Amino acid sequence: MVKRVLVLIVFLFCLILPQKVSAAELPTGKAGFATAYDVLYDVDDSGITAVTEKITLKNLTSEYYANQFKLTIGATQISDINASDPGGPLEVTQQQQATTTTIGVKFNQQVAGLGKSLSWTISFKSKDFAEKSGKVWEIRTPKISSTSNMESYNLTLSVPQSFGEPSLISPLPKSQTISMGKIFLTFDKSQLESSGISANFGANQLFDFDLTYHLKNDNWMPILTSVALPPDTSFQDVIYQRIEPKPLNVTVDNDGNYLAWFWLNRGQKTDVKVFGSAKLYTNSKVKHPFLDDTLRRKYTESAKYWEKDNPQILAKLNEILGSNPAVDTETKAKLIFQFVVDYLRYDPSRLKDSNTERLGAVTALANPNSAVCMEFTDLFIALARAAGIPSRELDGYAYTANSTLRPLSLTKDILHTWPEYWDDRRGWVMVDPTWANTTGGVDYFSKLDLNHFVFAVKGFSSTDPIPAGSYKSGDQDSHDVKVTLSENDFLGKPQIDVQIDIPNPMLSGLPGVIKLKVTNTGNAVYPSAPLAVKADKLLILDSADQSSGLIPPFGTAEFSFNTRTKSLFDTYNDQISVTVGGQKFTKDIVVKPLILFQGTPFIIASVGVLMVLIYISVLGVHIHQKRKAKGKKKHVRK
Image 1 (cartoon, one colour):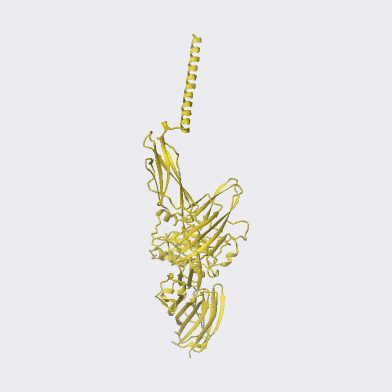
Image 2 (cartoon, rainbow, N blue to C red; image 1 turned 45 degrees about the vertical axis):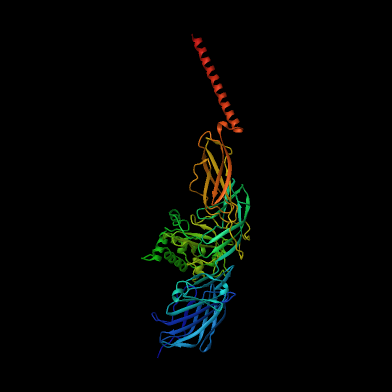
């Protein structure tokens, strides 16, 4: 007589957070049940996804049977659940926990007997897999988290043609066809074991922003201070409509941040308002990426929170990479990324504290069960730097319509943190281990979505600059970061103005200096361009190989050039010509010899000569009187 367990619950995580599952009813080493899947994700014009799974369950034992089945789905908005087998509709139950929904199915018949199988179907709808963000539709499906005894898994993704041409599909589909107004993408088990599907429809994303920075000088002396403005990066362009009050200057730091500078008197408070727009791209704008050795060394250094030389970090890295570590950067970075995603556990309860403490990489490694985006980022950077991979931190805004699956705020306005690493082939590559963790394995490594808007880059320092939203006032209810999706495209228009400062007239025979002030009066960054200074007759001594450097909007760059005349007696009219990026600016000057020069300088020179003559005369009288007195003394002695 065959001995059977009364109930066998088979767990299959086909859409979900990675978990290891075992059927306790089966003795160790038993194969249990095999499964095969044909899955359809059918997205409609509103973004609601109808999921249909045709599942075949095959019994691989003669001792056990199954009469129930459970699926845990990485989604929180599940509706219209239906299941059926050849015997008719099946009884289903639904239970939601945090970021997942578990569906239980009770079969009409038992799957009993070696080699016996049951084919059945389950369907449901969800709003969690497709999302329209501004101009972009994003489709995300989690990976297959358990492939034990899975004979096959075929998935078809159906998307309306009205979404536009796909700008990103990862992994690349086995096939792509168009029929009846739909785009059909097919995938198999081998593609979905390591990551889910990420598909973007639309080339770029647009945001408008309104940022407030609260500045205060508590010092006894006036200070010069700065705030970090959202910068241009490899994946985003930024324009600025207004900065109020107008900054003294806007400069670029070593990480590419734009720093707006302001002068604050003792005890002064100032609120700085910044208005602008940003355009985010799927593909990097940099065609030929390059990182010089100085920056490469800097981005692999140890720092506070990125303790890459710590023995625990090094030991864990050796464990991750194994005895035969991969040579190429992307493979090493992916191994580190996946470790961080699987090892840390996101803890939303920490967000209840408005001053969330940053733990750093070593503490996160020792305490993996209470992490937020800072710990996911810090641990990735520390491990990547320990592996010799240049990496740094990005702080900013990340748009999400589901903050449970894709959590945001550390505090009210510091919205999200994620890392990026350097690859010699691809340049800077942004990744998000936090969202890969909280969404159940959605691919946030191969290519990031169009929702991550960078406010500040931290590479030279792990603590500075601080991003918008961190310059707080006493009003805890103030919202200093306002970012909205936009449909209005823009074209950045940098525009420079050059002021030429040189003594006019210029005196021949004396050294001269040409001072240039190059100001960007446009709304977008002015790219680094060749800068040349020429004159028809005047000698420009150090004009070779000059560059303007990046000049952000409201920014000014200053340059000096030494000049000489050929002789002491040159006299002529000349023109200074300054060319920056193909734009030409001129100033006429007059050169006159000093000895023939009329006017105020001549008077000054005459006064100088007169003073010298007076000095010589006084000195002569003094010497004469001294000699006369000395002669009288000699006469008395006689």
